[in-house]
Amino acid sequence: MKKIYEVIIVGAGPAGLFAGLELAKQGVTDVLILEKGNSIKTRTKQETMWGVGGSGTFSDGKLHFSLNLSQERLLDFVERDEAQELLDYVESTLLDFGVTAPVTPTNLEDATCFVKNCQRNNIKLYTRKCRHVGSDVLPSIIGNITDSLAKSRIQIKPNCEVTEFKKEKNIFNIKTNQGDYRAKVLLVAPGRGGTKWLQNIAKDLKIGYEYQKVEIGIRHEFPASVTEEQSKVMYEAIYSVQTPTFDDTVRTLCPCPNGLVAVEDYGSYICVNGHSSSKNESPNSNFALVQEVVLTEPVENTTDYAISIAKLATTLGGGRPLIQRLADLQSGRRSTQSRIAKSNITPSLKDATPGDISMALPYRIVRNLLETLEILDKVLPGINAGSNFLYAPEIKLRGSRIITNKFLETQIKGLFVAGDGAGVSGNIVGAAATGVIAARGINSVFLKK
Image 1 (cartoon, one colour):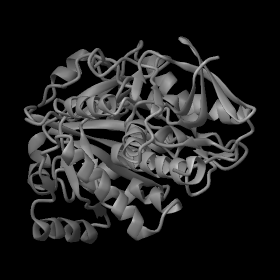
Image 2 (cartoon, helix red, strand yellow):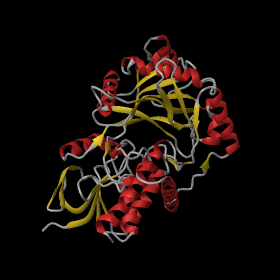
Image 3 (cartoon, helix red, strand yellow):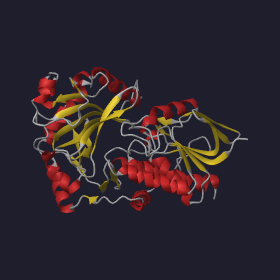
Image 4 (cartoon, one colour):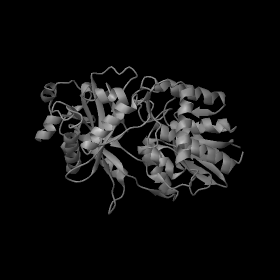
């Protein structure tokens, strides 16, 4: 008879890892974590979407602990005070595992001045408590967490891809490329790379879900001096604008002061992202500039819409991201290698194809992005300079929101979800917090220990 685990967790990203830590803390150690990708020791930087640590492992390593923007999703499950307590708990845990990065903003008075200046120019500037760990340090933090789980006898099985699961006679049967596993309780946390997979699973099992907005745009690269003053105080400044023509919301996200532009490989398409090491050595900075997209009728599937754009951009780039000078996009011409070379800065991502981003992104999105850069130039002079670079596509998928109760349990008794792939979080810390919520729900409601 094959062993029946108390709990099996699908996905060893922040949601799965923190769920494991929380279960171990509460004395539940008969737990197995199944991970599609490599272990933290063998995983390479090219394996961006899968592997122990999740898609954030080789990211910029920015950790957010304020209850705004994507962290507000926690309010769907807990009250405001408890949500902030969860964020503080995740922060404390990360500090225990070796995070030493300082808190920003470093000067609240200066940050307030930046906010007021933006308000005068019809721009919303978000401030939030942030620790920038760095893409060079974050993997070691993940390693410390996995070591702790191993000491608690919680096993992580890498390179173990779950293909399907079903519940029979109160036991979950999980099929993988390494054989079948059984568990009393199943927590599914597949991360951003597993968004579409989980949506298909939910459809097959008739689990309710709803589509969420996606964010589609570009990665904007510019001289670090353009945002240097703000970055020293806030490190992460998020700007939001309502565009004049379409009244759409366009915002910056994931700013990388003195950082690099990087490729995210999703298999059938590629996207761009940004990251910074703890040393911040690049002469350029970058941020994502994206438009929020919500679809109603006749099509609601924002995930498929965003992926179709990413695939088109990938085709135009010959399997690589597109790069274009801002001046070329503004003038309605494609970029070439010779035009790229005329820029005042050197692109940090070499593996990109000069081209025309307006061939890949819809007109409405391109118009919104150009208008937003014009507006941002009022508070960030130089952000709209023609020699700056745009990379496409930058796509922020939000997993279809799986319908759950406050413990993140689905309509199938004993089946829980957590993290970005389930549409209940939007970053590393938020995913970790949902892992904690699910683990506490598993223990108190289902295992009753």
